[in-house]
Length: 271
Image (cartoon, rainbow, N blue to C red):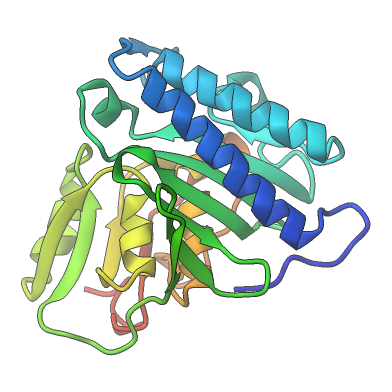
């Protein structure tokens, strides 16, 4: 995981990490207060609730107040999406990832905040309020998981040694044919389905080995989780084997495979 570049326009990494944590917790509290609110469809067909908008206000206002020179890109402001990255450095937000699961009473939803610099997710936090777990990259390097209700913190490290069976995580809500075929071609994998950006967090914590995503996804859904995974020693690559980059027009991510060192690097894009 690369350190945040040192320039006068970027925030102090330690101040950034603390504000990311504070805002994610505050956004999560807003989401929990609004449990039971109804979902409606946005213009693109994706769902949105009052909780998405409340958490978005917390995150966006907090970041703009602290660092007004850094643009904020959020899922909930569609007018800014078409042109892609607004600057060399920008914040990328998904205030409530897993809205479908949230609206039907599930628990696999997260608050996601990332800093993108020159296409790389250099800092991120993922908060799962219903699970009482917060995952984040650390300013001095590495990553940690916190149980906010107790303050307990543990270092995160992606699994390094292979085990049997290897564990793949896949989407609970998007069971598309391409990913099914990818998994079927690898019968040695045990598949666990989980919602939202928690799939990256299971890789970062050593509980899973690989996460393939072979259908359309937007960058705000994955940037914070990818930042945590990279900080914990994992990798996210496109199918050509290049590190995933952020800031594409429309913020549409390519197909990718995220994996821990325990998953042989030659395998993600191969058959």
